[in-house]
Figure 1 (cartoon, rainbow, N blue to C red):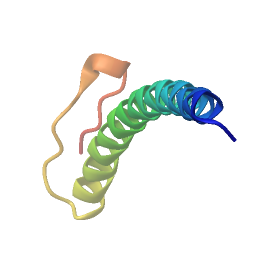
Figure 2: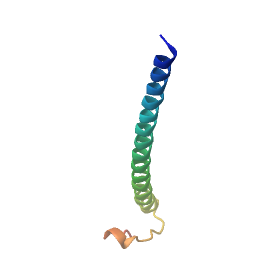
Figure 3: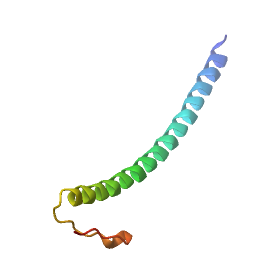
Length: 73
């Protein structure tokens, strides 16, 4: 190959790499959003588990009425 065709090939590689990087950035952003949603759900479930454990241990249970439920002894 001559020098100009080598430069064209290199330029295409750089462009393709740039597109791949942009795709990966979008994928990372999507995964971060999914992680945040799952983390929020896990925290909510942990609160509910804590309430049930407290109830099963026959200790006081505080009420969280935000979801319309309240546990008490």
